View 1 (cartoon, rainbow, N blue to C red):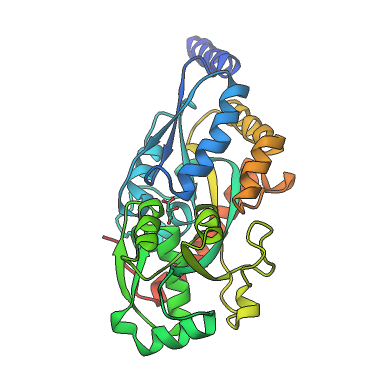
View 2: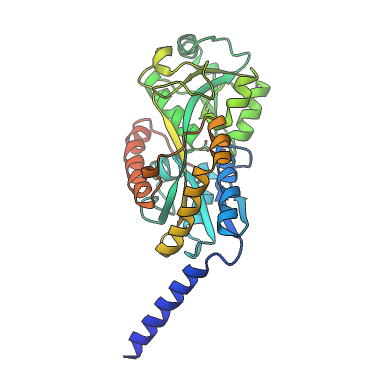
Length: 321
Ligand code: MLT
């Protein structure tokens, strides 16, 4: 009988906690440096979510190993709703194939909260890089493979994974330069210190528009309204290269569903807010449809992404640190 009272008490506490959640600031882990695509999306949606939840959302950039250091921190946090992780296609899609000793399974060690934004991938290069078009780029890098270097945000990151697919399709391997995020990688691309990158549109719109970097193509079936002059890979002669990355919110496994529901509702409200939508759309992000915003949809999607990227990365012989 006594154990029944204990269970009832614990359930009661759980319900009370969920009802009063959140009672203090929330940390949102971003597994890459400030100023990169994952960070930008986290700050845009986080700013609005904090208004809905009535508590500050503090962005914590936890760097390293293609985003897996921060994501491990997020998986191992207390399941109380006060530590969230802005994961993405790298940390929650590519990482299992890249890191045999990965300390989390993206399909089981998180409570999916919701999709935040789709982020189409562009092939971009430094302004002075000789090729003018994607076809010229392919010919040039095939003829000069040993001299060309590629920037990315760490083994298994979105930028690394997206270019691994491109390089596999071209049958090429380049010298790779790893950064702590594609924010700093972009700085070096603008400065001409590195040749090309496969990166998320939300990081690139401003520099492409200002002519500080070249954009050869966007790897989506349609052009982006944010960069209408950038051809699709299909138009540019490489139709098989199709990649849209994504950024999504996760809580640790075991977080009470009522708390996940509150955070999910705040994210959903942010994605319906006119100002948030404008900021995301101006950066070329794709706002998830209503049916793509549920925790269940994200859980299924993460499983599909791990299944998609694992054979691609293994076939390419890609390895994490
Ligand atoms: C990546 O996976 O390439 C990251 O999203 C880059 C970043 O956010 O800095």
